[in-house]
Image (tube, rainbow, N blue to C red; front, side, top):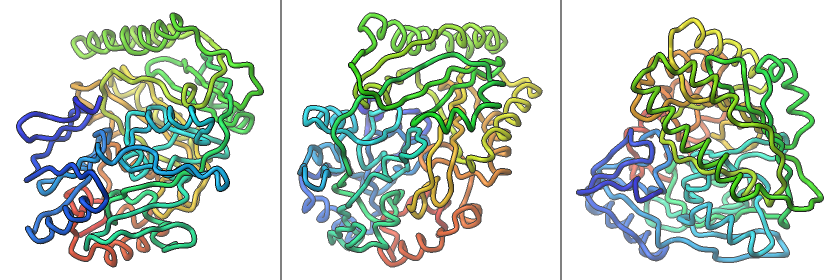
Length: 439
């Protein structure tokens, strides 16, 4: 997937195709020393520096006209500590490789997002998350970080070592330095039973607290223009393993969720008036199913249909009201939305700029098919989310700035003060960081 995120003739493009950049030069360091040297050289040449992962952010968080650092040689597992139950990985390691390598070692992360194409550092630095009642984002599972700072020095941080950096750098937005290695907490591999079933939206909203409380991992997709949702409940299981049969898996995950969905979106893009009818069919295409497998095979699924996305975290107590407002807005707007709205949760965590920092959160994600006009829908949705003091995902589209973030993040000033200390010359600055963190 990352190959499509890389353009020709020195132009870098993200996965969604909505962001491009022309860096002055690209560097692919093979070691932490080489990366540190590249940062020092950039400083001598007066250039800014950005490390980029697989380009899965929809914001321009990784874009630069300076030095673009590509991490594909900084990959692999450095160390597995079975006593401490941690694994240390190079920052450029794709989550897919990490998950598969851990499984071979009989280990697993506790929770993960719903795709695994991103790099470990790209995913954590932007606050990528799945859904969980008790277990939080990928970054919340970090036990230690190695960071190359603006002067080219290497800083190690954890709860014991440089704790104030650790509090912020787990979701550091690339603003504090370049993460070169991450130590994650892991546990012995376990089984999850997933129960996917359609459910009327009214029922999901009226029973939301219950569905959340009764399941370790609850999420649902609502299909705009319908009263239908598809719910997914993942809970730990004693087994036995009962994976989705290969042919059925191909039919449901590839043919229906990616193939037919792609065609439906092409039709919807060409003839928007067909979208509500297609939505009715889509919402009924996926039938109930139950399967049991190791975590990454349950949490993650392929996403081949390209889209753009906005996602906001609202206080969990506000999610039902926000969704009712979103549905009312779509119903009266004349908008034609062909992508389902995804809803997940996370417990409060202690990371300075985590979307769940200090508050139990629910996530509402709105998507539009790549190439369709999304501004009107996203603007109207954003108005609803911000009225609930929503915090946008750092890697997804939004129009917020530092002034707004200073109101919705109680520890915002703590982060910017740390950035002043670690990167006084703004070596890691770009337009996006200038907007969201201030100059």
